Length: 147
Image (cartoon, rainbow, N blue to C red; front, side, top):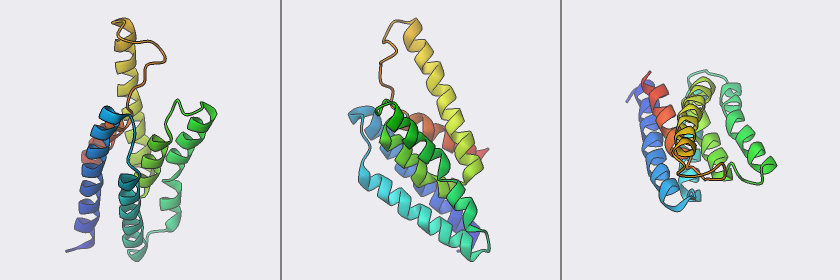
């Protein structure tokens, strides 16, 4: 199997895991640490393959920043933004790369905002209503992968 096919396979596996995590996030409002660890291992594998191909490690480390920022926001807001969201974003960062992670995250946030406005306008919730973010992040990452 050539290297490009391996990286695509890792991305697809990561998206499948994210779909499972998204379902769990919707149903239980929590994210499994096992899923985060598996995504992290896939990220390490992806980073190793890219390093073997001659790509620098700084790209992989920079792709951790969006997740780290989300963890900081979670800390500042007393976990109104969940730590699991930040951890899953950090775990998938090296798999998809910094540019795709940022664009996928923004796409997910955009759709989340549309849903939030809909919930408020229809009076189905208030500004404290919790919305699972991983489903929208998964959607954004899927769009970015195939864009």
